[in-house]
Length: 406
Image (tube, rainbow, N blue to C red; front, top):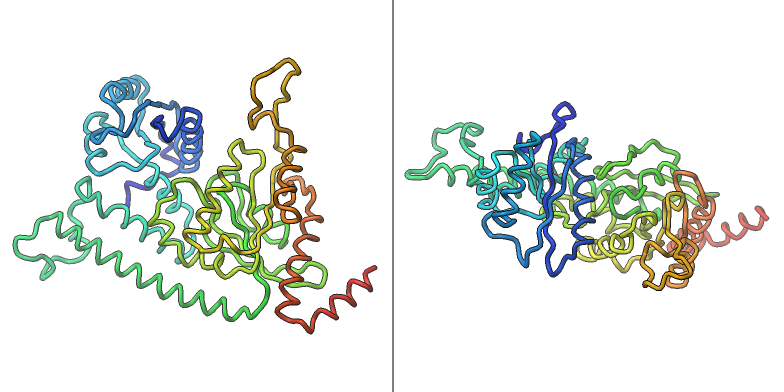
């Protein structure tokens, strides 16, 4: 696992590489590289330059063309770069060819995300899930650097006649994957029992793209101290807190954030974490309204909820966060060019989304605590509806409480 780990003492200068393709225009490619740069910084690296090339499809040998690879090589030599990160997954052959040419460490988007997850995992559950994802990532790439794994097992009776080193390594990794899956099944059973023991209390889950402010909002709503910072994947372990609004208790869950191009095997290994979303009665979809691509982020989350959690049809409130950071450029009266996302004001976005979502969206700033009381009132009404459907005899108590409050 050592090749994934970057410590704070090892801040490495890195360059980022992406492609402009028929399916991904230049603006989109630059946006993805900006996100890749944020991932690199979160992992402890220092991005110093971005390289983009226009190709119909990635080069099967070196991802980019020969000329672009030579340009990257020259830049690396002149600036003492120790690592190159590619925005898409690389095959084992591509990694070998690129490393041979550039003579520096080569990572792709998936290995970078795995590095961050490995550094952020705190509990045994999260560490097991990350380790499983790492082995699943490494299995098809055994021809790269993985050798002499038999030392981790003890050799007598463990190596078949005529078996090559790569076959031995593959068998050892498959054994480890099998063992980790068994461990996760045991963890899943434990967590399932924990969820059952919580009874029929209404469950609300915070979902959203990574770094949209879920943990900050969790701290506000539950008055707890969930770790939150301006980095990607600050939260890996699911946190559940009991929250009481007026006289109404419910469970609030903070979950791992989603991201574009999230590795499939990483999502699969985090099944037990995502079960909290599957079991939720109501989803609070947190959105960073200040991000220029917030609508695409909404689509990524909704697609992931459907594909992984089968939860796209659950009752949902969209919470547009970070209104304090929202900016836009007002077009001049004589500017006849079409308006873009950067020219739309917050008030226009509010009208658009409130018309689309009716009473199921709200605009807040968790950092500035703007409209938090309005969010609590909206949440109270939604949770009360679910609660009284589940416990009809409590409806009278709510009516009496609300009358006394008035």
